[in-house]
Amino acid sequence: MEERAFVFTQQGLSDSLKRNPLVACVHYFPEIGSTNRQAFRLALDGAREGEIVVADAQTRGKGRLNRVWQSPPGVNLYVSAILRPRIEPATAPQITLMAGVAVAELLSGYCPDGVSIKWPNDVLIRGRKACGILTEMKASTGAVDFIILGIGLNVNMDREDFDDLLRGTATSLRIETGIAQDRLDVISRLFGFIEKWYRVFVQTGFAGMRDAWLAHADILGRPIRVVDRDASQDGVVTGIDADGAILMRQENGSVQRVIAGDVHLLGR
Image 1: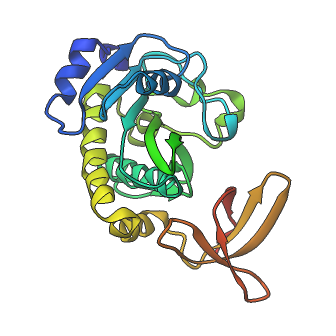
Image 2: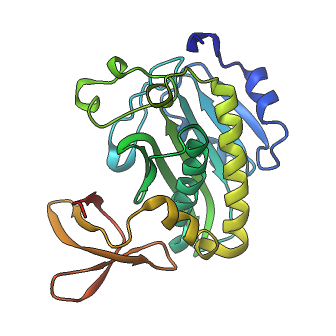
């Protein structure tokens, strides 16, 4: 199969997603700076929940902590969804965890073994990053106005397509399966899982997806190092709390809530 045959069009995307009850409409761009930025502008202008922005390529794709997300044309998924849950701002980071479960279930359908969630916003296949999740929020008077859920998923990139610094740490569905995937099918399946888990989140919060997140995370009992800016600390994961914070037991026996930082597994 030749991945360039899987060309995105406005009509093709709309047809693929029209049966999803979460998707209100699709805004497609052959090239854009950032789908998150465009979705944020649309939300400010009153766009409905479930309006999504899809790009074939991004010139300013971004990840967490202002990192660059490599976004070449014709091979991957770059999509941002507008969500308007009635939640408090403090609860908003749980949307990232929700999306991680949805993406992990999606990827497990292609790669039954080796899919894992890396807290808080990456999904890996056999230890290499296949997906990054970036959520951004606007809130006022103690309530969320809207949340932008951005997902970058490597679908049909080959190893040599990645920048030199990423080749050892990144992967794609094509690399892992040996088969070029139909991106329209992938995005349709992705939003099927997002709709499923977003409905759970709205009804129950993180509690309703906690077990599913832990099943994909494979992090319980693992020694980790948390790096936040210039500081780092080590410990062993004892769980994840109701708010989605990692619980880490340090060498002195105290348990700390980890709410920010990069988590690195140190082995068993």
